[in-house]
Length: 192
Image (cartoon, rainbow, N blue to C red; front, side, top):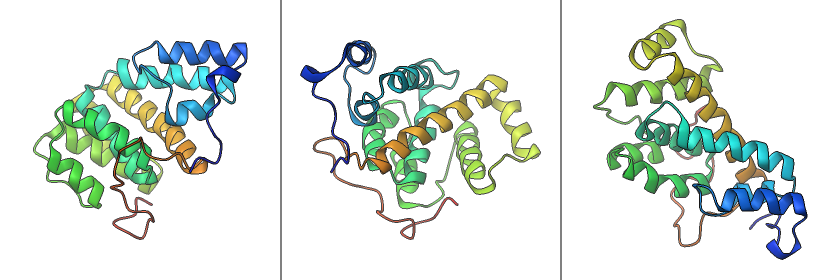
């Protein structure tokens, strides 16, 4: 259950209403989950939603790769809301169901596409080593380019903020979503 309830739209300040309307009328088509929590601090909500809009809709990474990165972030943080919200987008973007299932289960997927394997390795190494080796950096930029590495780091950072918000404020999964992720790091692999 949410530790901090979303603000009733009828009780919003002018600043909150402005951000609320901007989010609700944008590509997200609604204010849910961590975005609703951030409205308690409208300046944070405004800056964060703008970064999120870029990471989700305007990044140089094609949706299949950005959704893969988002699922990896959700799995790393065991952020059920994020997982449930983005799994359908990942499937729609063309990420294979068996890859999604393997990530959920904490097993390295059998990737058939080099770009997906590189995104997976990049996110995993970033978490495990708190950095990226020269070899992986070179391999990634040779295949996907400098813009892609900058955007992937941005996606990882933004979805860390999203996941932290979900975890700290105990944001429940979207209505009707069945939990899929383990509840503790000891279940499945740990990304530390």
